[in-house]
Amino acid sequence: MTDAVGSIDKPDADDEESAESKKPRKGGKRGKKGPLGRLALFYRQIVAELRKVVWPTRNQLTTYTTVVIVFVVIMIGLVTVIDYGFNQAIKYVFG
Image 1 (tube, rainbow, N blue to C red):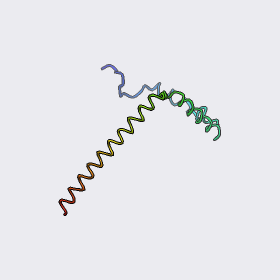
Image 2 (tube, rainbow, N blue to C red):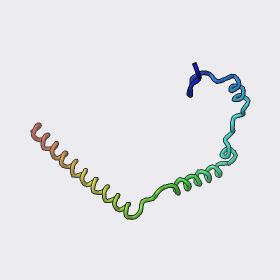
Image 3 (spheres, one colour):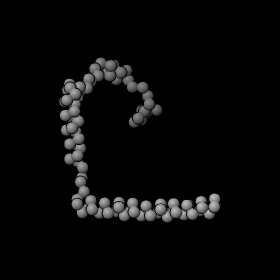
Image 4 (cartoon, helix red, strand yellow):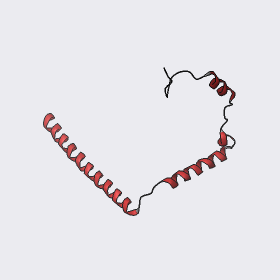
């Protein structure tokens, strides 16, 4: 039977020897910096990620805020009606 992609067979002996001869990396760039260097790297990474964010326009933000407020008001009304109904039902059952 031929070897398929993703086969679960053990790797060849040559691969094991080459894997053992490689030394593990020790932290790369981050391993050589002290606590302040790592903190600065973390801050730079945060700024880089925030630059990738697609920020909404003022019009979109207003629309989204309005939708959220309307949804919350509707949910408050729905919960109030259900709560009032349960309150009346409990008063009817228990007197």
